[in-house]
Length: 200
Image (cartoon, rainbow, N blue to C red; front, side):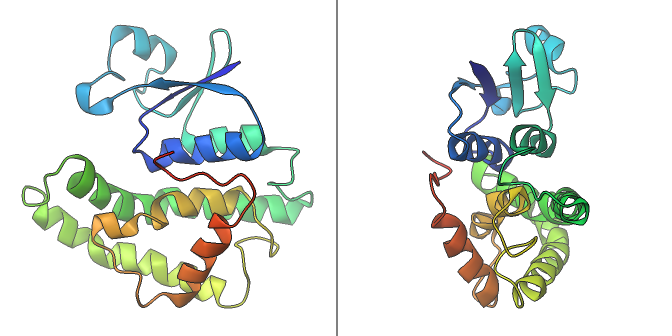
């Protein structure tokens, strides 16, 4: 059985739990609290020298870190990855967008505010990230104005990657009121078979 080293509140870890569940894959969850530096122990660093979760143990002593790499590994060959070459590249396009243009602003603000409970301490940094976070949401809103999902008008891991932190963006003080297409898309994701919530 696969083992998932994770911190449940993490959107990156949630991505992996969601795809595993939607694929019907059995897996063991191993709680790893980064706030208690449990991903920085000597034992954990042998598994992932980068000291981060999620980390998937595919089989005994075979480890794969990085949430979007794990998504790709798990979903390749399934209905969650397009069969055509361009479609696969477009999935990667949105997954790169999520990690470079979305996650650093929306997820980081949420981490400081909701997980660390340190909004006042990081007030200046949070304010700096607002414009870039809203810029990412603007790109998503524009794209979703002419299709229901991010690639090929069908649910894929591109949607999972972007959904993880978008659906909890309010926890980072991002207001989705002005993003009607994103709000409709969030409901479509929540209506997918075997959907689970981040706190499940």
